[in-house]
Image 1 (cartoon, rainbow, N blue to C red):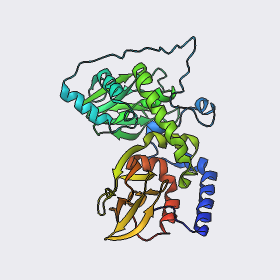
Image 2: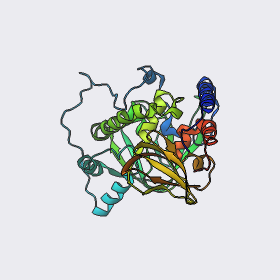
Image 3: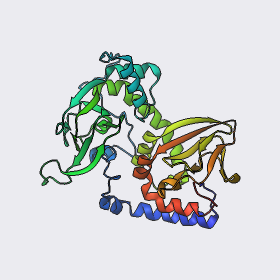
Length: 341
C-alpha cells in the first residue's frame, strides 16, 4: 500500500522501471484495448513533441499574426437556474474546469451553448484542423471512431463511447492546437453543451496550465512514477483532483468498491484493517491501487492521522489509462506489506 520496500525490493523495482522504459515504444505500438484507445489522451503530433521535454497546455503561439487580446468578454447564453446548477455540478467533475475560481466558472457556464444532435450526426471529424469548440455531454450516447491508416474507409474502428452526463471531449485539439484525433458520432438523441476556442483559451486553458505546473514537479518526486515521460506526467497532472481531510476522517472505507487511486500530498494517514493498524503513510506515498488493479473491494480503511491532510486522487479510468503499464511494479510493492487496499 505504500513505499516501504526493503533495499532489495527497491533494487528490483528500479530494474523493473528501467526495463519498462526500454520496452515503452514496443508496448505503445501493440496496445489496442479500450482504455489505451481513449482518444482524448492520444499524444499530440510529432511537431508538438519537438518543442522540448515538456510544453505547457497553454502553449498556443501568439504574435503579430495571432494576437491574444488582453481584455476579453465571453459570450453569454441565458439559462434557467436549474440548468446552471446542472452544468456547475458536471464541470466540478472535470479536471479541465475544476481549477477555475468562482468568477471564471460563472463566466464559463454562461458561455456554454446548447447543441442538440440526432442519431448518426457527426459531432467531431477526425483530422479536422480547424477545431473551434469542445463539448460536454448532458444526455445521450456518443460513439468514438478512429482511423489508424489512410486506407481505411468510413469512420474507422470504434474505440470508445461517451454515455455519462458530464463527460467532456474535444479538448485535446484546443489544448495542443493539433488536428482532431478521432471522429465522434451521436448514437442516440443527444443534448450537448459546447464552449468556443476563444473562451476556452482565455478562461480555462490558463487555469489548467497553472494547475499542471503546480503538480508536475510533485509527481516527478513520487518514485513509482519514474518510468513516466514528461507528456504522461503532464497528462496525470491534468487528471488529478485535490481533496482536503481532517483528523480521523476516512479517505477509504473497508469493503467499499474502489474507484480512485490516491497520493498523499500533505499530512499523514494510516491503514486500519479489521480494527488493527497495519500501515502508515507520509507525504508522497500512495494508496488505493490494488482495488483498481484486482477489481476487488477495499480491504482496509485509510484514516487521516494529522490535523489536516491534502490528498490527490485519480479516477479509475485515468488510473488504468495512465498507470496501467505499472501494474507489475505496483503488485511487487504490495508484496512488502500485509493487507491490500
